[in-house]
Length: 476
Image (cartoon, rainbow, N blue to C red):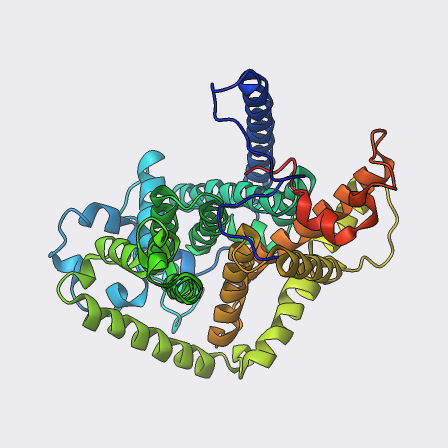
């Protein structure tokens, strides 16, 4: 059965009284408030856990030369007040990266009382000693301030992974998704380096959550949040802008399908609002992207195309300089996912090593089972998507996740570890789906008030899946 967006089916399609219109309104609102309070408490705890992990690794994470670039450009946040000044002219550093990460690092340095002009830019043609002498290496105080900024952002990504997986399943799934991400070595590394990748991933996580909420309640506020998140992501790494066109294509499909069923009535407001709001995504995200990037103000289209061409040329140059990192095609990109997110860095292997070191376990050869859990989650999410219908909130989030995986796979020209963080976010949500659905099944099997096996719900798994929200405890 294909459901309309915003139509959430419970055990039966029973009208729910509006707040204050019936005798049960108070009893309904109290559990909702309690549910929100519990979810908020869990989110705070997960943020604390993730930040503590990041903070404990800030000093030990090896410095990457690219950190000097983001710290060097921290002054962009100051020069935003002079949009036609020298900073935003058409030269290498301005075209090299959009300014979102520079704004983040600059804000973090200001909050922690560190200077915005602290070091030069690392020159890869010279040695570490040469760069130290040339002033490219930041002081320890500046470096740690930049890293602590990212430690906060990384912890926020963990919180949004919890929210996203909770929406798809339940709190159990959300907690597993968050902990899987928080303890993954790649996430820890990128949360303890002064780079822009965690900000990119946060923008994606917010987009996933906003898209789910939009399909449950297609309001302009969720529309705006999706567009702003994608615009900030684009002003950090360009690629998220492509997701806005995926949403616009979905909006066009919505309008066409409604028109074919209902004729011109489907194109009138408010019946057409979902399609129109989705069509607005490139406009909103594009506006935010340009507004954040004064370099584009002179000629937004031409200079945006310059950025794309510059990025393509830089990828080709990096492939020549580091041939070992060159990725030929999407098939090879998938193989690199296994190497980077399963073999080289793994939450399950990390957990086994931790148990050996801290709990006295004697696991001789720790192995990674990350991808096994991810694969189970992907299969279960696919089944959920098929059974809920094209216009469900679950489909919206799954579509965006798939589109992001596709964008990274097609665009992965160079095998650098930081490019895999968006894939890790999606893997974490899929891990949450796996544990959330399994926990719901186990709860139904062993709960004291389990519905009798003779009931329609127990005898029809398809009806069970469709008629009851698996995420009865969801953070939505």
